[in-house]
Length: 406
Image (cartoon, rainbow, N blue to C red; front, side):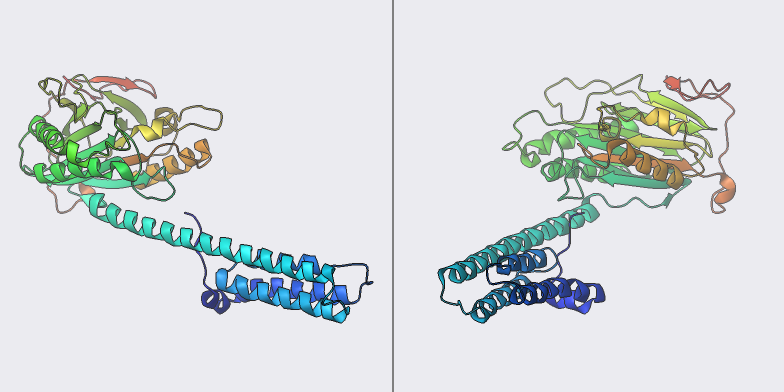
């Protein structure tokens, strides 16, 4: 992202850098020699300004100042050679070249300062990402995990989208993905509240509704302190999707707090897991707290669960078309979580022309077959079929497949 400034010393250390520095020096020599052999009424000296201007694009202010000084010296030499060092024409050319070279050095220095500021911002955002959005383990229990985070702001690598994976008792895995209203660095505080509460509560609360309630309580207690109300005085809330996946057996369940529904991939079929018991987003503290119900679904070995934020499905093409995630996923090969994520990433950037208007996050969770997990005892099945949620198959009906909620 962005460019990385090369110092004079570092530039000269590289063979390609030495070659680039030779270009403006060669221009100074060529222009000077040509001017010396041109008729007296032809003045090529003003073209020497090309040398410092070109240097500013490949080097820093020090190197640019050096080349500018050489260009001014060449202009003085040309004037002296033609015997007109004190003539008004040559004096004007020397002064103009000196002023232009100084301005070029000034803007090059401003660019270098801006580059350092961007580097510091990126360094801070990378550190914040490592602390806040700790990369989930690639393997956790019977699950294989892959993830992708795309920040809308070029200066940052983190924003208002969040996700985390944590182990709980029983044993089981709990997952959260969420989206803070707003984007960029200003939304990190709200995301940190949710993630901290989730990591603390994932192993403390026995049920998913209790965990969701703890997240809501934490957000309501801390939202006023962390929300950027000065620059964004509007409402502040977080949409979230919380999942609970048991290690033993195919049972899993969701609580959807105003978040886009996840996709379930099974046997080359894609199903949208619409919530039958939707809950309001986290942070709607003035509203009465509803009784949160869970939406169970079947998550068998070989299945893939795709969670995402609205920055994915609201990503627009240059013509204004939204990204059709569910339809595209139905066309991609689903050999593994990593392969699916790779296809989505490449296709999403192609759809948007690599320009995202909002932060986007994807979390892909694959249940690994038991023979790939020698340390586990397998997944006993109780033989009962679970009730189905309001799921919509996208690749045709699948007889006998349960994806639902009661």
